[in-house]
Length: 423
Ligand code: CTP
Ligand code: MG
Image 1 (cartoon, rainbow, N blue to C red):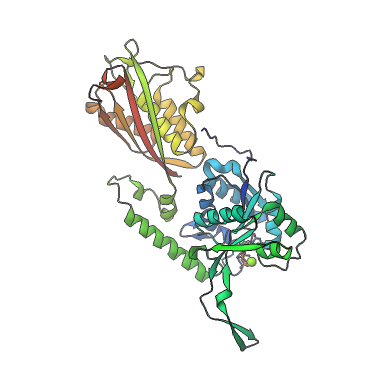
Image 2: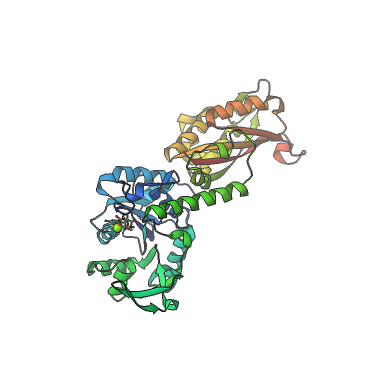
């Protein structure tokens, strides 16, 4: 499958999420719209959006932002969505949450059948919660809220007098995202009196049924300074857990050295790509492998210079970004690439990644064939490739014990992996 980054809205998604982020954050009191307040170095909105682009099925995402921050919001959305940016829209919110949700619903493409409404302020909500709500709407065809049992003893009060203890066994606290069949939610909002405090309330007031699924403690809403500190502690805790789980690479430019205060999300947003290429030997052609010339060695046949190593690296980088492959991006039938040297394709892949906010972190490539022998020139090849990739490249070589086309000396193969992360 080939995916291309596009700025044209895609209109084929049947699932959508409206993320309301247009509030001012009065109770947080930082003088910044709440969705743009950083949590451990990364703004709440970016954290809230991240899980949406990891779901199994594509979702259309509408972000509802303060009127004065639409450009800033678009930047956050583009950087977070990457190649999925075509599945996003940014619209201005209203005076209250109710109006903001309505603005978001109005921006959905006609293909959408199921919508989730989510508060950006619940920015640590895991992807599993979005998935569970989508699945439950599909299964039951009604409204769905994520809910947690109430653990405090609950009292009914009048003025400063406690009237009674309320039986909490039938009480839950509800979170977002709340999910609905879109046409029914639209109809509910069209007749809503605005007295309801959440979307499920609006839906129910118009006669809809609402069920609940299990919520997640991390999906708490950030309202006050205390909540913000709690969120920072949660992020710090999960960053600690992942650095224990993942052993360091041992390289000076390994994953641990690449990020600053936002390290936990950078570590979470790592993508891996795989590339493979084969070219037949052509004794008449000059031999270029891994961006190096090998005088006296048989060359490789191909529309370009046949540098299987560079092409495998290019494909690994493109695949890590979900950006298709060398053939679909650089058209081997395109005369512009006739005789092109391998660095042209690798550089093109790095630029394609940059255009969707991704950067190579590390590349490995294995050369498979009898010749040229790369051992003596490994360092040189690594340096030449690293200079174009902009990150360390490890080169290894192997033969196939005389087996197959490589063993018979008919051609050269290369397999590469690439790790990229958000720039
Ligand atoms: N929201 C919105 N448009 C509004 C008001 C709120 O999109 N006019 C969004 C907020 O951005 C938030 C969610 O609705 O993601 C829940 O609102 P709340 O937690 O109350 O956020 P704020 O209104 O920003 O905070 P405060 O009430 O303290 O000002
Ligand atoms: Mg509010």
